[in-house]
Image 1 (cartoon, one colour):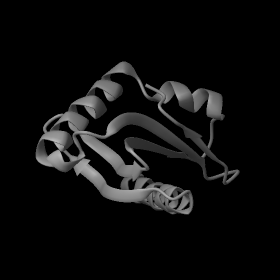
Image 2: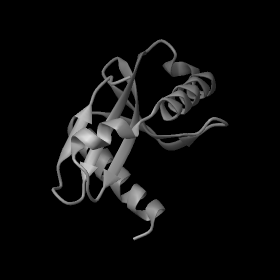
Image 3: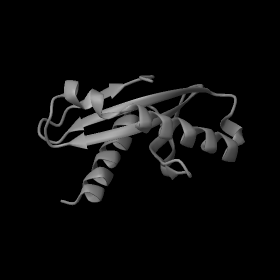
Length: 115
């Protein structure tokens, strides 16, 4: 399975997980000049910008280091662009989440407001 197809599969699993937790999906694969945010969703009075990591191996402890400073900066810049484009969300509280999914164990680890 190629990297893009595997990524989309992981994002679909993350969307299903979030919807079961009463999150409202606003956008998937939102692009800006700075990069991409995998999922943008609303939960109560918050807007969450969610990065999804779907890997075959590695422990969750290893995956937590996969969101480096440059990746975080690109996500933050993309979130700013989103808020400029969709001003109806500008008064919501913001947070940045990461969802780790393991293909091997089928576990989901959702880090809320992790950076």
